[in-house]
Image (cartoon, rainbow, N blue to C red):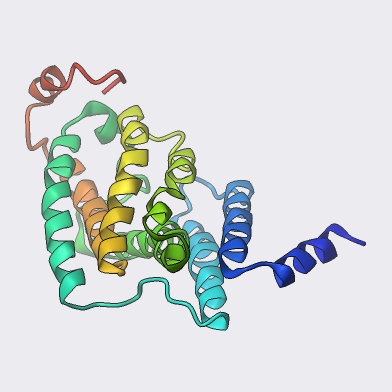
Length: 229
């Protein structure tokens, strides 16, 4: 019996939770081994959309499950609260030398014709990430395991941030838990998509301008953080 046949036999016999974790792990592995040039934004969009949107959505549809694609009063309220909470992190972070050196991740300028397509593709990547981490691995399995679903993806999320500025890697796990908790409460991906997506676009826009705060002052204030800034 081939490995492929054994894999599908396991999937056929698995519960929704088991299938989600198995296929989620497979998507993560494929994402890791499917390398994309650091300058190829469009290729990154294609890879992430295929692995982190198409596969989870297809899985949810075929099993009659929901991943959090909904907007209601609770989702809107939680979105406003989360966005307001993370805004200072983007404002302060955009003044850090390590962040300004790394971002924008894909080359762009402030010219409308360059920045708008860049921002749209960034948002697609964020929607893909939120569909996978907070949709498939949190909201999608919350009926089975409740609040524990909030803690399923932080390690994977942090691993996928390896290579980014140290401060971002340090905060990636707690950020995953925060976004997961808010999306779990709202049973919607809207809060994390807005906070993450618009925040990332804002960060690029800020980095392309002069720092909001003097970098020396920010670094002095954050010198207690045990990573290079």
